[in-house]
Image 1 (cartoon, rainbow, N blue to C red):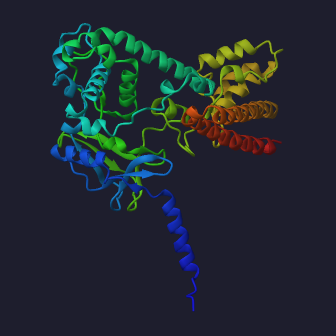
Image 2 (cartoon, one colour):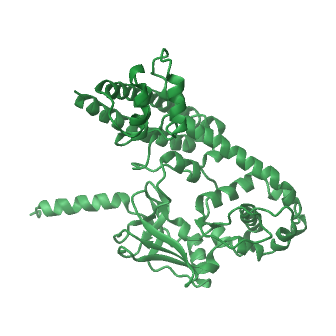
Length: 440
């Protein structure tokens, strides 16, 4: 006779199923991680808390070997494991950097070292670390132009600035690269190509930890605050966790303590900062699902889209908003339109006879029920416009995924960003409906 399974058994099976969905697959047996562990051990680092794993949703990350308690040290990486400008200056590149005028930037020093060591292949003492670095990145500077064109306008503008910045960085560095020719048998132009420098730039930009160094005369005056931290940089981002991370001057280690607790075999996260999804995609090349800091930005052009063109005081109102910093960072979030957005709309909706009350509006005072209703109505129209626009872009992305198979990964990333923005706008539209209903 078959044994009956009771309610407790069903609950246990559901918990196990949910756990399996987020459980990582151990990757510590892979050759690249075995080599990395040996390399780190030679530098007096052995990790007893974490192990590399692959997770659904986040990809490669670090998984807890045992349960971790709040305040516990999860990583203490010795200084000699860190790749810094000190590493570069003390290497074969040091003599070339020291004599180059004007002095190279700390960023150029790090990028040059990465490209040179990657080119050295098996001869590089940093090979075990280089082997686990991404071969390509998904920051907007790496995306195809037709994919960048699909980004929200504020992000698209920043992406184009980012691309121009990296291109200028490459162009201004070519003479310095030429001075390194004595170090290589091959032509330096083939080693320090744009694609090679772009890879190195993205590696530093997306993976470096903050570590301030003393100023070196052989480097430019730009802040020298980046360090690459092998193994530690496998930790993925979550907006919902808190950690304490800093270089300990006494132990000479870069240390991370968790302010959260973790169960055995869970993915352990750190927080890269309270960034919205557009900032995360721009700087790190990914989107965070259900990010509490995510928002949709309202430009000046859209802000005035539904206001009456007959308002003779409109230019004056815009000028006041500019002067008081209310023309930027106007957003829709999970909890509806931001206070800044509603305040800007309230001022823009002031009737002629109430215009002298603009200071009270900026201080958060209610001027009239008419003004409250008008501002909420405009906010709702803007929100509906964004929802319509977002759905149109998502439809376009869907068609492109069918037609441009080679770009499917890039398109999926952009699709994820727009899907998250759509959820935010739908939540905001619902909040606005409740606010409008609550008005007398």
